[in-house]
Image (cartoon, rainbow, N blue to C red; front, top):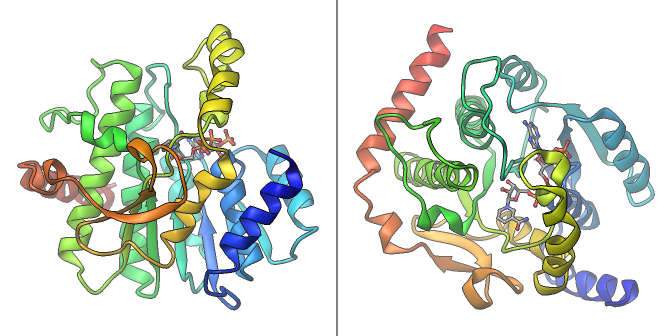
Length: 301
Ligand SMILES: NC(=O)c1ccc[n+]([C@@H]2O[C@H](COP(=O)([O-])OP(=O)(O)OC[C@H]3O[C@@H](n4cnc5c(N)ncnc54)[C@H](OP(=O)(O)O)[C@@H]3O)[C@@H](O)[C@H]2O)c1
């Protein structure tokens, strides 16, 4: 699709949304494909945006590129697989945050332990998010928190006896952590009914998540399958709209924001109901115990 057509479609969608002038947003993983598009959308709507990055030269490039559109953009370093960085980031949060978008994430990663002793995907895609949310719950009553989930949450299992099990395959670990994240968001919705929490699934988009340099997929996958995925699946700008819609809708107890099309993989976003298999799952109590255990660990460390 020609660039101007994309811009027109995007602007048409954005022009129907409320203005975010005067609002403060934080976006994690800002240098990623979906987050970069989300940031552009937020700037278009007039927000002040703080994004996090782990690669300084990518962050500089992004700041340079987006400063053409707005001067309301700021960057913070944050590696979610390093506990110390998460806690020092939390000390530097802006005083007021209207929207916090958890977008950073990994996918098909080789098995590794972080220097904090956790399995990498578990710490990056679930545990650090819990640490950040606990801070937002305590000190930022104004913040609406938007979490980037995935429909893989429906097809995955969690072994609560060993939630960061090292004995499962790469994609299974990803699904496990997206399921943990979804169960965590449901627990937050139950516990704090006056606060706003959103779970958003962006659909499928051939982003840099699938790059071989990220460690999981080989060069052959990147050379032959990613170009095909680019043709079949959504462009990142469209996939980012589910995350954006989370700022305005989707915080109901049973709600998910996801693309409206086939298998929730394609299309403009809408608010739908989470499946019963997740809402009525018996894992509720296990999740409560896991949250309590991880919170205890924050206090004791
Ligand atoms: N693309 C899809 O089809 C799809 C489907 C469902 C859900 N999602 C979710 O959407 C989110 C964004 O993914 P994407 O498709 O935009 O992929 P992406 O382009 O690879 O973006 C992922 C972002 O996360 C950052 N990141 C990875 N590990 C990190 C860490 N340890 N600490 C801090 N940041 C870290 C990456 O940083 P660098 O820029 O430095 O690499 C990058 O900015 C992810 O949570 C993903 O699970 C994507």
